[in-house]
Image (tube, rainbow, N blue to C red):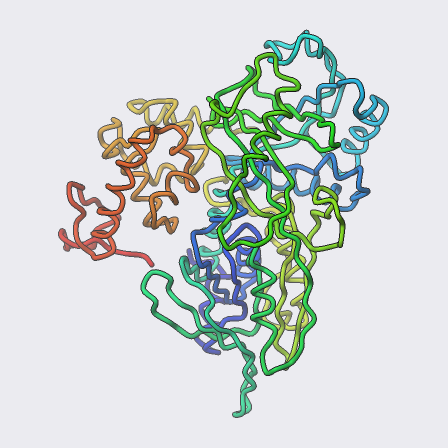
Length: 554
């Protein structure tokens, strides 16, 4: 893509031999920063030691929301900003994000009606221009579908928020960043970084050593500024980046809070979600998920460190089951859980004793020496990632204003695969199903929900499912897998099954194991430049005139 940002980024590297910005961490915040900066014409590189969205950014509750409960903690600015961003995200990513109606059943002994009404009135009005339907009281015993709740629960309130595929939001921001000229480096960790004072009269710069996690190979890059978006590892990275030359830097403290979720077979009909009050004053969501399931979450539990990753505990499972069984007409048990996952939020430590009360707002910590800045990002929520990215660029403006070609721009340019109005989403799906009438309509609708208009790059001229290659089950075909590897940095089976898609949820354990074995063999051959066993080479993956070689984009 030959955009002005692309040209400027390439020119910046060629002329100065260094990047304007090195972003460390490929979650939603890092992806947003890389996209915004590259679109302003800055030369950008982003590195991620694992898979993109491999931690917190693929383990959220999948909501674009203001955070209704944050009003109780007087987080009015955060809620207002999030509600405003909700509108923007629905406009720039209508293929992976859409409105969702929430129902809050009212039960005696918890928040009184007047408090709920007041909170919902504020929620309807403090976010500026809001296009979604406003809140109202509802009768649960008069809904179009059976509520699925206890018969005694007959009244409640309804309001609007939105849903998003969190991991795909990360990938689409990275694709956009790449289109604007950014270099995206997966499975690449920062091994070392130090500020270097140029003795020859040139610019001071960051000298960073990057390590390819797979091969162990090292490369050096230079940058004018560094942005630390390492998520749960932000504090360690902050210390690593700002402890050079024996100088003592002041570091912010991070509070790691785990949010865990369970997924069970569909609990109720209808396309609405439930927000359930709990007796500890927290709330738990029940959200329609992947058509056949209900997503239940989340918890707020302190996490000591990330040495063993994030895993849901038995206590958290019991907590979530207890919370929903208080409302459900047909209780569920641990035996019903089809999938479970947990993510860790790297919140700014405001010394609150209650994990639920720790602010979800973001805090940007700027450290600068020898004219070389570093911004570390603490906290934040997926809804406000784009605004957070703008705030990071505002922080860096004194060092970047002479190099930036334009101001903030990311609120209006559609993410890859969009390019249509959100009101036209169903029309685009129908158009796709008409164009590919020989393919399964349900399969096409699900593919569109991942790739939007870009799914045509996967389907090309196919008019039968057999033309899409091997069917792995769960709606996953070989043609899509090849696309995810070539264009979306997928390198392991789980990248495909649980992040680029959620097809793993729709597959049996045997199918997942079979796909994993196939993928390892196929990908090894792909990386080696050999035709993978049993695969048909195709235009787009083969070099012209080289039938036996597969091109690679790493």
